[in-house]
Image 1 (cartoon, one colour):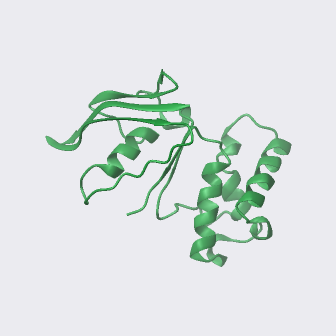
Image 2: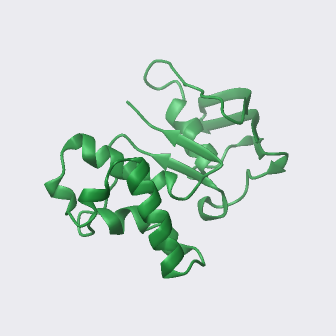
Length: 159
């Protein structure tokens, strides 16, 4: 698995948010984007996830150009620092949310849910409401919701 970012440019009102960024990330690699506020870190992650379109450049996963694919057609996951959990859903429903949009049986969804809950150590919390969890537990729910989809790319946001 390789992710290639090629000459990505994104401007907002003629101001460069991302200016000709190119990089390659191999399977298993960990990449941290560091820089001051406003340097384009979040914009680049949003472009990778499909939440923003670049003005030019390409994003490839294993040689396949995903630049113009909508977010739901990319096998990517983006976890925001604020977690973006659904307060009206319990832990299990939050984790399984993305799986329900795939063509999977309830049995497969439950198997994947149980597997990731075990890995992330959330098994005893699956029936709890989000407001009943500590900040760290909520963070693990957000991570589990992303990982259960088995994404090609996992982007973690921290401000």
